[in-house]
Length: 448
Image (cartoon, rainbow, N blue to C red; front, side, top):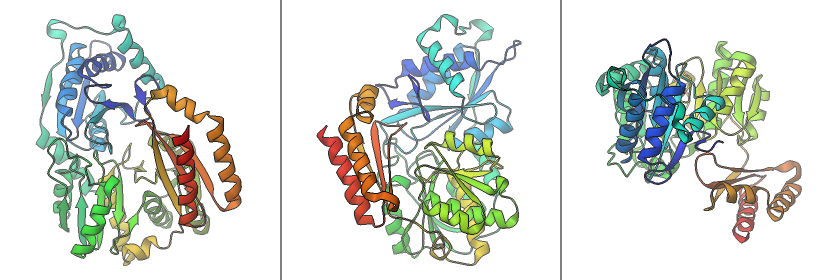
């Protein structure tokens, strides 16, 4: 992680760590780094989620881009994957999503995609950071060389929804619930499932600037669980704030995480001859049951570092076209350059419809070991984070838990790349044991 860029763009509390000045400087630096050259004007697409600070950051970042000579197209409120898709199909120089994804409304972020629809390389992000701190080499245009800013939200929404509709293989006969997290899918999800002529209802689709991810969406999936049970739905889909993630609730109200979504789609792709590399990519967080399921079904399961950019890197390295995270960030690289929650929903419905099974029957075929994830929030920034991760007392506690679990479980401790927390994951033979050991490690952190 760099000075400003984390594992998923520039992040921070809007108005504090991420203010209008930083957004302007980042826009101007990005326009300079991504300039086309030969006097050809760069064109950058910008979308945003529904949080209140997006107005400020969109305006500031756009101003920075145009001050360096880039033309800006404002897409309005659209999911992050829509930016990546539209950047490629319109042959734009870059695409930007102003969003803090699954985080609470006071946070925000700036994600930048290159002309190929992929997130920027570490080298390009580092160069942008250098120009943010030292503007002696950034472009500062005047007169007719300044960029223009324009937009047409309805048109771009329709174009994106059409691309998702094309991925469907037929009408799903069941009853669907959609939780839009009061985020960027609040328009597109309704338009998409209406176009599919599905029977559906939508909740958390009334954003007010501060209710994004608030007791809704994939980070508060208990709301959708209750909704599915009360309404006798056959399936529920929960998206996060920028709709690049999707989790599922089955007809019994049980959560289906990204691992199980990935597994059942992988098996279907293998059977149809469309699974490339005879393997899929998960992460170090993925449940150990994934390895067993892959082995029993004749393909390989590979683990990357946590973070969708690392999943994608391994997919490209190993020649795979399917990968994802437990969080529900699934990448179908034949269809998209980044995770897309609504595309994931369509792909899963394709498999579910063809199977003739209920959701619980379909995902029940994937083994799963009890796994508990707890978070410890710190306040001292990167210095405090590094001190925690190197603390001998904490490291010894981790070793002791690992020795206790032996071959019947595992421990994974890592700092988040998007918020100031240390994530402690324990996998064990029983949920009670996993909870006990994870809680113990959190208590050690609290005592430091």
